[in-house]
Image (tube, rainbow, N blue to C red):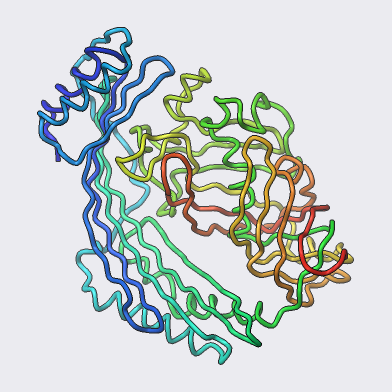
Length: 463
């Protein structure tokens, strides 16, 4: 995709006027998205995105630029402008590239291009009919198919030359239930870093039915209570709470600037001894898995919290310089338009020994949060607010009435310390995470966990 001599010339230019490190990120990405609304094709878009990003570091300062023009004239011109703006001490480029040996964590059996479009549309129609016919209360269904193939090359002035091919696909169903003038939504969207064989591993009919099941349950649900109470958060997407309320605060992009609630806490107890949390960039075919990060560093398993003790941050090259730490293979970006920074890959709480029933049976009155929705968090303080997509009351040690409109409000560090039960049913689910380097695919996950005391927002009085 790019000539090595040209790369050498660009890196030389980058270090000629300012900077002690330079990096090139080349991307060639092909995407395809098909959306059906009420069984009819609403959108069918395919495209190719090609470009090159150039980053220059000088100590802990950095500058970044990108272009769609890969001609030598344009790349040298852009690089010279970037380098001059840093005005650092001239560095010397060895001009000797060593290809990075990497593992393959995302094997692909069936390439997307080898499958006809009508087969993909058939999947969407199957899911639509399953979702729409689930119950008469279902008023509208949207089904979406996504695939992408991203080819990248990363080269830098340390002599690194690395490349990767990343393939991902995701299948989403959104169902709306209507009753007495109200609408409730259900959503389910599995995905993976693999080829079209993914659709031999999931049942799109069941995906559709699950989205509609959630919508139906919630449209008939009573209003959730409010107040402080014990809450059991189910596995899978329940892990988004840790991802948002704690995971972001463990990224070096926040820690290095003093804007993280976990700053200066390495080696200290920050959670219940029952909690061990991991970010693993090399889970086979994981939605957030890559063979190398977006700086060319091999991805790895990073133990963030072990038995309640903070063990590690997620570190990229630039913030690692600021903190005096090596990269943890955690640099990510949406595309060549963004400079990389520290981000999560597949982040989850390690399973414990309790069953779901054991977590619930000791609660006289509380909330069972079966599936979380979106939320917001302040990484500097750890304060968060999350909606609950599907929830139920817990009464006398049993799950009883479905309730809607529940929110979980609290502080990430405080909640970590209030986890007094961890289940044995680990599950990962897929999401998109937005931050300074764009929107990236991530896995979130956990077994069921019990938080002894947390604020639940709802419309009824306290429990």
